[in-house]
Length: 549
Image (cartoon, rainbow, N blue to C red; front, side):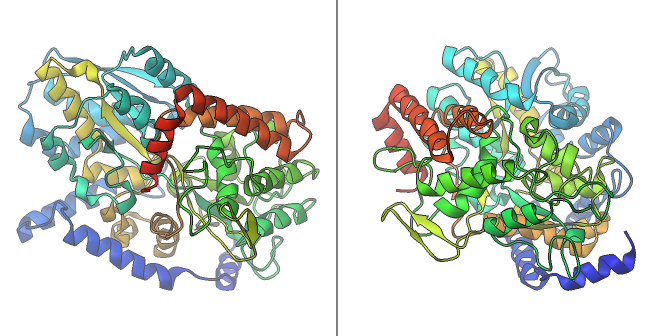
């Protein structure tokens, strides 16, 4: 893209940077004044620690291509300091651990292997790996939960599953020394307890933030641009722009232009978050913490007018020839994020923070110079479930999708003190403050989740340009701190609800149901069955607790 064209587009946009400078200061102050590693440190120690973080962010360096296994191992080696303080060399000789996690986009477990190889070499422990695709993860975990047979010692898992696992006694409680090692007080506010806890006990080492943010192509918007002068601010505008782009040419690739990229294929329950992005703006009323279920009865809200509108929005684009890329009915979220948007197909997307780091540091991305970020689009009206009426007022509700990945240790280690310490040591190594900065800045499957991640100078020194990092990190901070954020409930069976919803949505998108309402009613009926199976009174109690009621 020509420099002058890029500058013209940038100048035409509504800038968020002045607002975000305040967010950057808040993040930096929180990192400095909280229980971070530098609190109370002597100047020499603080400088040495700062040097370590700067050194980490130069591996391999932004713009130097995708990180390799050698890079992951180097990062893991540099971050072994906290392990050496608590574990003697060779202390875990003969201990074997089984680790269950994901292999999405060659990230997650692939990085963990590299990070933990130096840990294995130092401690003497050996890790055996169970790698699962995203679509296979939920069924595999649900099987272990249903049968009570846990054949792994460490698991990469999201907070929504805590009700199914911690609530059924399948996890091991976190030792106090682990909390100190990972500096848990550095977590952003919405990931602090009760997230990661159950019945007052801590179980989770957070390694991810997880909210969905709006990604868009700057070359599609601005004076004279094919998408219009302004970036869409509401879902109504998103749909209209998507329809208006039909028949136009992508300014970067020369291929057909497309607007918003909805994933129309399920993803083991995780695809439900993407229809929830649309629904949140319609359904999450500022005066009501609930948006998935009625908090007094657990009656589903997924078939109320707000959710039906969200489903109808997608159906409208399906019925618009050329609005979506060809064969979008078979595109899951991994396809829309990595094979379409980062590869130059489409102009708007909701996704986790992977897009922000991959856009600038992955060999697969062609949009790094033209991608911008914002919070979940709003709506020019919101449904009030308490009155049963639409209200004609602007509403926005960022979707805190999945509450981030974490590392958990299972009950399998109980009764063997050495194995238990080894499992928690491995988990703490992956959840350390410094290694987390590297994972946030480079392709990993994870996004910023600590106050200390929002120090813009560190990212700029790594090779990110200031405008980009303020935009990307700012979209995360604005979402985390939003007063009307749509928070996910940590209740048993949550992914059973999501998975069946995906199945019914797929039928609706394929035309097997007569309308959006009929599709939503099928989801609601299935959700009622799940609630009755688990126990309605228990679910009501846990759901209300998750909402702070």
